[in-house]
Image (tube, rainbow, N blue to C red; front, side, top):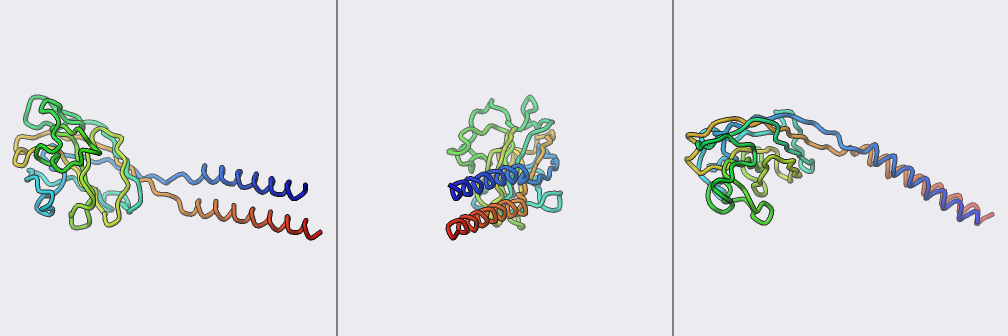
Length: 218
């Protein structure tokens, strides 16, 4: 009976430790804002011949460690549209979801040609797109649709930059305009908290086993 109580005690301690650790092990988050000009394409085709959609008037908006985020592989980025609009030369100015007047652009040309339709089945004209790249601007993984968000993605191994711009046809950026603002947050897990949690659980289990062994010996 005493052994059972000790085991129940150990289990209760483990559960308490788990709750405390889960509450304290929340990720540390850094947040910045970024401006994306309507004349910017989502990545540099010259550096990525396998993803060559054409060219834009301005280079992509790039986020890296120099802009206030760690951009560490394994961290999670969350991107949200905040304000502003971008125009593709047609009447109207659009948020990060773009304009549906031309229909779905996935596979139809421009940057959206390279968007995976199984993950992002619909991408409109002047929608905000992005991709991760290495330090040289070469794409790591595959481009993605960001839109108004919230969009979440884990930074892949080998990537150190986030590249963003709009979905317009190659050479079609000459009459674009406008600017949108997005927030970008990077969640960084706290390894110290997880170490505390598992260390505490291990300690409580060890104490419980020692006490149970002492009871048997007695």
